[in-house]
Image 1 (tube, helix red, strand yellow):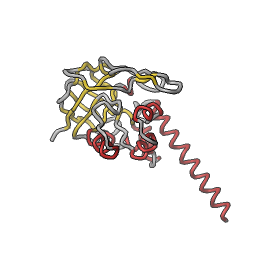
Image 2 (cartoon, helix red, strand yellow):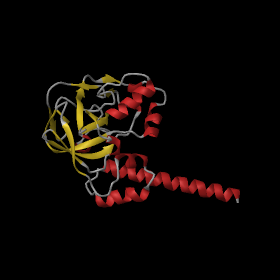
Image 3 (cartoon, helix red, strand yellow):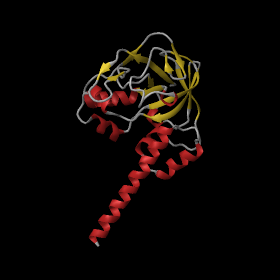
Image 4 (cartoon, one colour):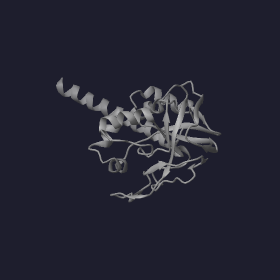
Length: 224
């Protein structure tokens, strides 16, 4: 069965949130008909926190229906399309395991997988679940940000065709989890178009591994 778009979602209303951000556009809900897709995202959609969200590498956010159903069962509540702040709720595709640089043809658009979603305090506030950021991080079903290569329009029911998958095989989940530094270094070498945010994530993983190695060495020295 081919993958398809179950819903196309845009901002319903901005909300007040505590902290420095102040406002969020995470409340996205399905809209009928076809929606224009431009270089910076969907028509009728926007981000409130432009310092940390948006831009060409985070133009469209997709989340898998299978992951949403799993969370719904765990949380014991309905998680309708748009609840994760996603623009596209997709059925039949393992979105969090998409390869960085993979290209999806949807409607007459062409989108490229560009980054994992990194959960934040705003997402925690929106979810209203205890330790939500930690739980989301441990599960690592992040969904995927997409870059717009060809503008066009998308509507619910459109097939999602994976038309290109890079040979390096490094996935959205790999970048988010960061356990295999050699593979992440390879990504930086073979995908020169990756965003500065991805390079920063790789750098953070490098530092985290280095700190863990130093701590392990210190413990071993103390025991000896």
